[in-house]
Each structure stands twice: as C-alpha cells, then as structure tokens.
Image (cartoon, rainbow, N blue to C red):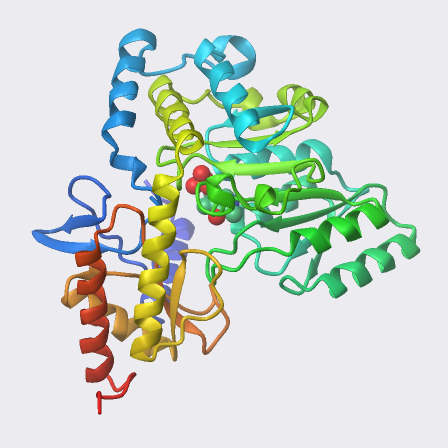
Length: 400
Ligand SMILES: *Cc1c(COP(=O)(O)O)cnc(C)c1O
C-alpha cells in the first residue's frame, strides 16, 4: 500500500507528463521484432529497431541458442566470480577479443551495465572525465557513479576537448584523466573524430574510452568504428553491446589483458549480478562468427541505408549529416514531428519521432533505422508513404 506522499508524488508526476505531451505510451509488439512488426492486428514496416543485421530473428542463432539450452540450461546459476563462469563465457570473451583486435575482453549482462561497471572501476573522485555533450545516458550515469569530476566538451569539438583538458591539467586538481565518447552517435548517425581524439589523448595522457554500441556490426565492415580508423592499439576501453547489431542481449569491454584482469576483480556488475545466460552467449557467439566470416549482412545494411537516404533526399527531406545507416529525417517543429510520425504510423510505417529534450529544440526528427533484413519493396513502400505524407502536410513540394 502506497503512503500518501508516494501516491501524490506519482499521481502529480504522471499528470504533469501527460499534460505536457511527455508521457510515452508503450506499444506492445506481437511476435518477433523483424523488418515487419505487428501491433494490435496491424502490420508495419519497422524502422525503429536496432536489429541492424536482422540477427534477432536469424535461424542460425536460434538453432545454437536451443542447443545451448539443452547442454547448459536456461540460467548460468551464479555471478561470474563464484561459479557462474561457464565454458561458454570464456569462448565468447576470446571471440570478442579477436573481433575487436585486443588482448582480452570481458562480457556483461548489457551495454548499459558495461558503463556502470567499467568507468567506476578505474575512475574516482580525484579524477576527471571529459565527456562528449551528446554521449549516451548510460555513459553519463556511469561517469556519475565513479564520482569523478565530469567536464562536458562540445559535441565532437576536438578544440574544446583539448582546451578543457589543458585547463584541467593547469589547475593541478586531478589525478587521472579520461576522455569518453560514443563511437557512433545514435540521434544523427555521425561518427566520433577518433584519430584527433587519440592525438590529443597521447599528447596529454588521457585514458581513452569509446562506447561503440551503434558501431559494431555497422561501421568498419562490421568490426566497428575503432577498427575503421585502425586504432585498436590506441583505445584503452572498447565498449560494445550484444543487443543491437549482434541481435541478442549483453555487452562487453575489450582492451589490454591487465584492464580485463582488473575489471574481473573490481567491476561491481561482474561481481554482484548473475552472468549472461547460455542461450544469449551461444547466439552472440554465432552472430560474431557470421560477421567475421562474411561481409554480406553488413554490405546489405549499408546498401539499404544508402537507398533510403537517397530516396528521402530526392523527395526533398533534410536527412542531416549521418555517416551510418541511421537516417534521421529532420522535420523541425516538435508538434509537427509528432504529427508526421503519427501519419506514417497510420500508413503502416513504424518510425518514431525524437524531439526535445533528446535532441535540441527545433530539430525534431523521425529516426529511421533501416536493417539488412528490409527488402527493396519495403523501402520503396516507405518512400511512397513519406512522399504521400510529406505532400499532405506541406513538408515537400508537389512534383511539377
Ligand atoms: C544502446 C546503447 C547502450 C546500451 O546497450 P544495451 O546493451 O541495450 O544495454 C550503451 N551505450 C550506447 C552508446 C548505446 O547506444
């Protein structure tokens, strides 16, 4: 039974959100999260998942997941440091290190957990972290958990990073210094300026931390953003997720053996939260094998991304500066953006609107996430709907 104070806190909070259009109604998907999804009894072209390579529903992954359940059960039975480390975990971690081109890797239960785990295992209140202004929420929370001083630098603004790092050194206030960034930024699809960042880090002795959740499976022929720039030796922490392109659930940190040894004794989600399950590990392993064996899925993803981008651009939409398949369609006004998304929905295209405060005011957008599993027909249908809705709402010109 809720106390009076809790009840009024919750009721007032919910009312406030609903009155301001900030309350998110969650829609349940019936069945799998593939290129088409079913909500209620209606089918949609799905442009809102992170299932970039279609692996979440891949038959080869399902098969090994079933086999792992038969051989190892549905749960790992414990945290990693007691007796929850199964042979499967070792296999996965070796494979992840090979995939990322590092000495070692450590797996966690999610990408979010990686950032809870790794930052605070190394940084503390005598230290400072330079964090890109558009970093993911889990990076922000991970930094906070470490109690280090957090200094934000302008998004991908390497001059600002250098200046703030030099100021911090001059102040003499801090011990260790870290720079932390997304590899691929999820709202615009732009890529972090890693070569410049590494140059600054080497000059000023900054620890380097790249969370490439949207990069792995996507950039660098599928190997990720760090590999794309050939910086495997220069980035101290390569964080990734098994939940997006890999199609399953989980996360990992790849780096030097000493770093992984340290995380295995000091990072709290590794010590105090139950290990990844056998089915998740087996499916993730298979996904990484597929990625390393063939570029086919990655190429299809890039083709589909480019096709959608070119189509939207030809219709006259502003698709921003994406360097990845993430395809924002920038509408501007928040209300109009939400209406636009609603109209797409009516026409059978599921593409979420993203507005302030997730992105700056006046840059409301529909974020399209094409995958390798979309057919050309689905993308053509999407473009036809964009044309129809855009003309109807006066966003794009009637053809001459
Ligand atoms: C999605 C995302 C995460 C969270 O990964 P999960 O495996 O879904 O917990 C962490 N970091 C970044 C940069 C992300 O985009």
